[in-house]
Every structure is written in structure tokens, then in C-alpha cells.
Image 1 (cartoon, one colour):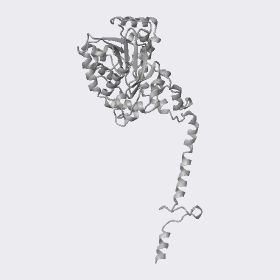
Image 2: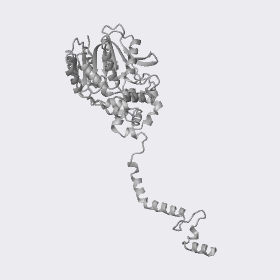
Image 3: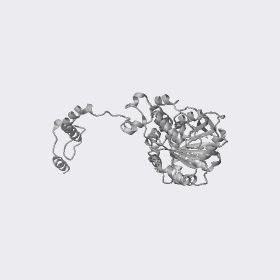
Image 4: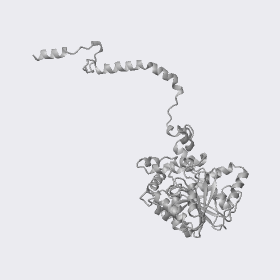
Length: 413
């Protein structure tokens, strides 16, 4: 009985040809071994796609080859920002790139120890300079390198100039958040005050501030220490509660996405070019890129500072503090009219609130960072245009113009 059932069950399936059978192949419900079905399918696929393959071979040379750096170089704006060749590997790997640029951008600078923190500070002129001291403070995500030309010209005009890289930026220390520095407004203020003591800046000085975030912290520090400031010069900075916030700082505040954004080594130069009508030259882009190529610490410092900044509260204090009669020190607003982040209305709103103290100087052709853009403009301008800019600034009290192109940014007493 059992043998008859087995013979019946076996006869219910069609037999496969002996020549194509394989001892290792298991029959399927169709009675065809799996390996044979797969082999037949591949053969059919290769036959049906032969014409397509032939066409692809003909157009193979017309298609671009795979580029591992395509995420950078295939985007025109990114290619412009990073200033790299089509094939960056031909210029060497990241280690070789760092070796090539590691000594760039340190003009007039040295390291200064203040407590547990080490600052990178640029200095021109001397303590015996007859016209006083100027302190230059940069914004995020840049560094004091942007002031190098202005400092050189102002020291030649009789000033003692300092420009530190904020903690977490440029070549200064970048402590891990929670281990010696938390990147809050109060900690930035406290660290700056200690640095001024180390630099022995005791007399009231001219304060020059530019930019977002840490630039704004320079202004809120001035509001708390007005007795230490003789004059204030503001270059393209957010000044009202309605100031637009650039996309970089919005992205940094998005969970997880901010962590990726902060590690983009070309973010600083992209930010600079994004607010300017000019393209950075290779040697300048190298310097702004260098800290972010060296390690991940600068990116995480920027991320932490951006997350902990209460932009609305900060700008509210700046707007009310400088727009009221309680601030009686002279303020010069030097405004690049081609700034793509901040409109001229920012400066006009501040002047409207305190017209006796605030004066605006509009700079045609300069963008978000006049200390960089104006330098380029003057070197491409005619002598007549240069003279015109100096003449328009002579209306400011006791202005002392010289032939150097950038001195007109500041007030001379």
C-alpha cells in the first residue's frame, strides 16, 4: 500500500530530462531545478539587454566618471567656495593640504595664556602709540584674520591694535563643552575681561565689532562695560529684534542635522562668500578653512555656541541699549550695502533711536564683511573713487585720513 502511494505521488510530477539534471538541484513545484531556472533567467536577461549594453558602450566616453569629491565639486557654488581643483586628490590628501597651509593666516599673531585658556591674539603697534588702543572683535563663524589689513594700516596711523580669536574660533583654544568652557554668553564675557587684564588694556579704547553670535556678544559686553569703551565702531552686525538669521545658524540649531553641518570644513568660507559680492582668493579661503580641517573641535564649538545663544533676547538688549540716551558714546556704523544677510535698515533703525550718538557711513560694493570686501574694492578702484570715500568720512569728528585704503573704516581722534 505504501509503495503504491509513493509511486502515485512521484508520477504526479513531470520528470526532468536526465541530461539537465543535477544531483544538487532540488525540484520546485514546476518540476524545474532552481539552479537551472536561475541560469535560464540570467541568459534571457543578458540576451534582452545586449542591445542596451552596446548603446552604453558607445556613450561610455560621454558620461562623467565617478568623482569621490563630487559632493563638493559638482555644485558650482561649493566649487567656488572651497577653491579646490576638479580632482582634489591630485593636489594631495587632507594631511598634505594641512601641511601646505598650516602656517598661513597668522600675521601679527601670538598665543596669550589667560587662566586655563590660550588665546590667539593679533597685535600691531605698541603700548606707546600716541593715538590709543583699538580692540577688534570678529563674528561667527570667522576669525580675527579678517582684520589683518585694517590693523596694519591703523598701527601705521598711530594706534595700538589687538584682534583676538574668540575661544572656540580661529587659532584659539577650543575646549570640549562642559570641560572648562560652556560657550555661553556669560562665559564669553568673563573670558574677554580676563584677556583684557592680561593684555594690560586699562584705558578706555575704541571697540570695533562685526558679525553674528560672538560679534553680538562683543556688543552686549560693551553695554555692561561702557566705561571701558571710548568709541564704538560697528561693521554690519544684527542690531534689531527683527534681524534676519542666516541659514547657517538655523541649521546648527536643528537636532542631529546641526552635528553634520558643523563638521563641514568649508562652511566658514561659504558663509563669507554668501554675504558678499566677492569670491575669496585661494590664500584667504585656506585660512578660514584651516581650523575646521585640523579637527572637529571648531565645528563643535560653533555648534554649542549657536545652540546656547538666545538670539531674540540678545538682539533685544542690543537694540534697546544702543538706541537709548543711556548710551552716550559715539557710534560709527560702517555698513556694506551689498550685504546679503543684513539690510541697511538695521543701521537706520539704530540711528533713529539715538541720532545724537549714531552716525552711518554707507560703503557701496562692500558686503557682510567690509574689512575684507572694502580692501578688495579699493585695490580695484580708481584713485578718484578712493578720494571720494575718504572725503565722505571727513565729516566725522576729527577724522584723520591717510592714503591707506582701509583706514577710513575707523574714527580718529
